[in-house]
Image (tube, rainbow over all chains, first blue to last red; front, top):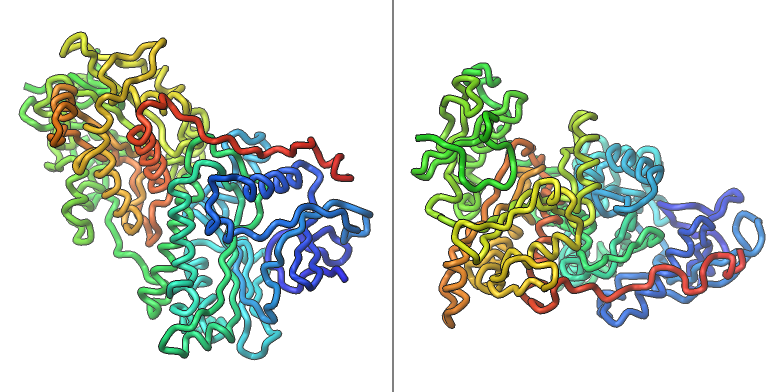
Length: 310
Length: 310
């Protein structure tokens, strides 16, 4: 029995008769192919990725498993349509907290059409992408009030997140208490989720090492998706030995992947390094609640060139 | 006795009555302050850099020494004008080979004026910056025909360098033979100049480690300048023990440095990693003459979505 996924924070949604992804409840996620070439491109990417001899197996585990394409009735009742069959990244989780982070200061490829460039550059400049190297595309955090209660900011709100908001939401994401305007995020689950040998940071460092070398693919508008369950993380945080929190770190959305042509994906790599630094800051200084940098002075004390004799 | 520098491949030139830098022949380089705020900004950056407690001494050595400002007669005979007094990075070299690499896929800061953004983005897209994360701003390579003979492509030619041209010029830069349309660069000096414990690659890796952590400064339109002398490099290449080639690796041009505001310079870091990868490729495969990547297949074998049932 196919139905729209219960937890989805970014992308098109199969609700109210719209075209969107479906899940079968048995671990498969069906993503409808879009007819403007993006669907083709995503199928081609998955096919290439999973058949390329130069992609190491430990890197493949960062991607959803790919099970080909399947023609299914579309969620918008428009009739049969091919769908990508992928692993459902939320399978088996009842109350997932999740965040979708679109990586890269630039979401447009070098040789894209002018209208696509114009559309992307506006979004990149109006979000945190340009300043930070990534932006939040969606987030939901389980509320301790109940297993089915979530804090889920609107898409419009998330779209306006600038650097300080991103800093705060990455702290909130690993906090036990719900968001509050009067209180700093407690970061109680930071070491269980971001830290440790299987935590987000360790996994992102593995990805980073690959991106420093790989020249096969350039990922535009792709995301890092982080998923965990608070119950498991609370258990992990409460143990001395550091039981794994079961956090999942995956790359998603490959409609705009390009051939790397022998060049590394410096745009994705830079954004990934920026995310790694932000997470390290949470781990190293969980009390800070958004530490400010030591300020530097980049304007002349004495005003202007007039004072220098011009 | 002040005079225009003999070897200069990028930036404004003090020739034919233009405003440009001067050298005193005793190791100091005088750069005229520009009156539109860029001069101010560069003075402020040097002052901040050399007084900031968080900048480690081994990182300061990547920057030209800063000796304050001095009012000097301008090279365009417009009268007295303040000049930055910096170390002359070519001091003591008779026949330097040098290349100026402007780092970053983006040369404009996030909050810059619209006309500046428009000017920069056109140059970034029309050069190798967007695709490669850096571009060549200027290059001269000593010709073995004579100590005073140089191969120096025109600025117009360098401005049009795309990825394959950059790949070739980075090989040519460490070749003993002069450029030839019929012959691959020999890369005979690659291990002496790019390799070894004091070579370019080792120094760039040090810089990279700093850029992964530092959130003080964001460098827009700044360059990595590489300088060496062929005689020294040939001597180093001929010795088993690997005598140092004396290559100099410096950062230059800081009129567009911004406060990092607690975020790493993901744009500069990404470009630096791309440059590092290109140089590693030269070192690891000097015979390649511009190795192509293993091609990936990113378009559907069977054409389009029509074949998938849409």
